[in-house]
Length: 82
Image 1: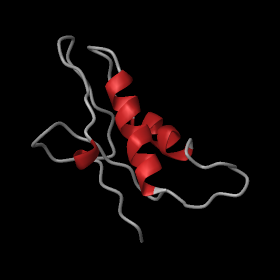
Image 2: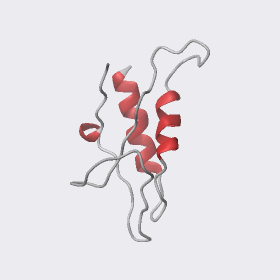
Image 3: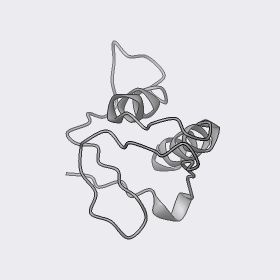
Image 4: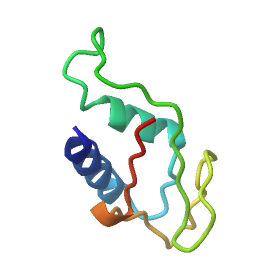
């Protein structure tokens, strides 16, 4: 499941267009999209954070400048099981 979540997250981040902001709620949706049947979830999400490289991550949306773009790398996606 962890690999599916990571792949979905990376694919989504790499699909965002230049200058488009990153909303945290979209990351929740992408993560939930790997659950085969939402009426029988196999995991729960308790927190999602994001941030610019070398910056503090938070659960706030990221405002991206007109000449910036989000990019996802699997090594930058961290899933913590509690």
